Image (cartoon, rainbow, N blue to C red; front, top):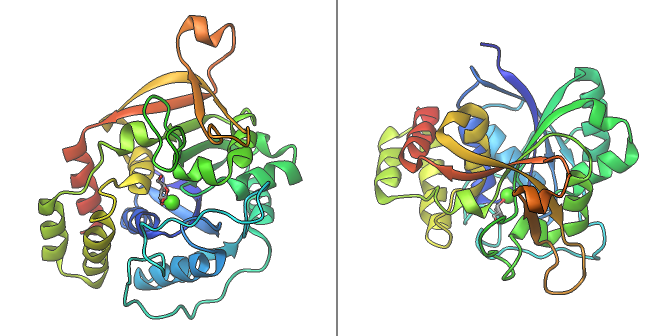
Amino acid sequence: MTALRFIYDCDPGADDALAMLVALGRPDALDMIALTCVAGNVGLQPVVDNARRILELAGRQDIVVHAGAARPIMASRGRISIMHGSDGLAGSTLPPPTMPLADGHAAQAISRIARMEGRLHVCATGPLTNLALALLLDPELPDFIEAITLMGGAAFCPGNTTPLAEFNFAVDPHAAAIVFDSGIPITMLGLDVTRQAVVTEEMIREAEAIGTPVAREFAHLLIHYGSKDPCLHDPAAIAWMLAPDMFSTVQGHVSICTDSGPAAGQVVAAVSERHLAGREPNCTIVTGVDAEAFRRLCLDALR
Ligand code: BDR
Ligand code: CA
């Protein structure tokens, strides 16, 4: 099996960091060819620092890191999440990064790398601003992106940031709308599934028992982030790329509410024939996961 080559667009963020470590633990299956950063859980500078701190911890300074959008498309500043601590990594003791940032904006990098690769996979677990900017910059980009796997949205359940919207889509609803309108095949792992992918005491104990520096950091993040939000949102997106069979899905047409009112960032998911009203599905909506198999996959990747 050849490893899936993908760009990881993210906003670490404790659960983005956990997702990175799971992905980097499976080089047999996943080849992270670049990492692009977007402001989200914390501001852009801590995000680019955290991404590099995690790559250095994993010994993967070879992965290029590009800084991207510092704010959402239509707002002068984003929302910051309180779940990840003021540094974004739940008070991690990892040293500041030393590896350099690559030249060029994340959106340009996504377009350039996708064209070079021909058929690129993108995994996005932050606000979708970088991807939306790339699509605006390069209208032919959908021809070069084979698929997008993303964590975001809440199709059939309440939001976690507003009653209707999940954090990543609430931060930049316009970017999410642009991405869902792109015609690129999307798999959406929203709160419908990530609320099932929760951390357990046993998972923490097992991670601690592995005992490597990577596993110790993983356990630290599980303990300190997990005490505020037990859902392993972003690792679920990586797990989908590794083992889609452990998930259940439904095909649907997703559009995103870009009104400025209380519904901003809401997912409108049409799945029945009546609601599709002749439209083709544009999204695989992930609705369920075998939570035990998911936790096992994360721990096995750490080993
Ligand atoms: C999403 O928002 C962020 O806080 C997490 O990193 C995750 O990507 C969950 O709503
Ligand atoms: Ca995230």
